[in-house]
Image (cartoon, rainbow, N blue to C red; front, side, top):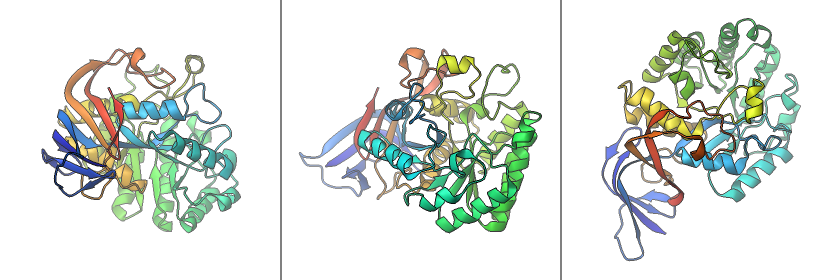
Length: 395
């Protein structure tokens, strides 16, 4: 099927153009003759960008589907402009076996909503010591992670990096020294980040740091990246938006940090140290949140939050935001999307950049409703989302 997307302002990581975009069989292609069998899609003067990719998501499936499941999470992703996500493995059972992994991947494919990638656990069932389960890991696994836990043993982390390099998979790491975090969570994140930066540098092992939140951790990452270590990292919208002043009630892991930390994260976005924006989308029931469960929803509001904090304030350009929400994370996941060049998949998100709206609980598509931004005025409304040229979301 041939399609032409017209009447838009198109942005990717480097381009701004009004030129028509030609699509054939879901792939961006060279211009062709517009005949009667070609579908012409009027984008109504909206901004057209490569759909977003999120490297850090919890869909709670299997085991906690009263909070979220593959279908509701996928629909929330589409509402936020995302067509690709990487799911963490802290499900029940954990993603430590081919059976659990393949079940998730098969059901996600059958839904045919978004592209879902699934991590495998670094240590078996997060026990912090067993790596032998990685020998039976399916070939399609791209990342391993014990997210929610740091790998506290130095020798296990060393062995995990060696094994990951041999297997050709990457690690995405939650950095937290357990014995320190109850006393000083800043040092807990900084200390483990320093260790794993050094291991990555010495072993030449690619690693991706999840939800970096402290000045110390991001400074260490920049230092070792400048040395040539194969390191990438992400920050969350909420760590860019909030500091701890007046927000002590916000329960999230890692916690909301100081204003100095927040401003440092923005500076590291600006200088290119930060590779990705990832939401750490963490649905919880009202009862679980009341009991102290950390985290909150992020997919549906990620673009609007980052657009407001980073672009409308003049910190970075919209092209830069697309680079860290679309281009870079798609590249890290090995996906053929995230740019508007010929040969890339036609995953497009159409946005009204000028629309201000109040985010309400009633419009949330996630199964859970634990958003920090209910009642807030947001800017930049996602209107439509196309995956390989097919309309998947239409507000």
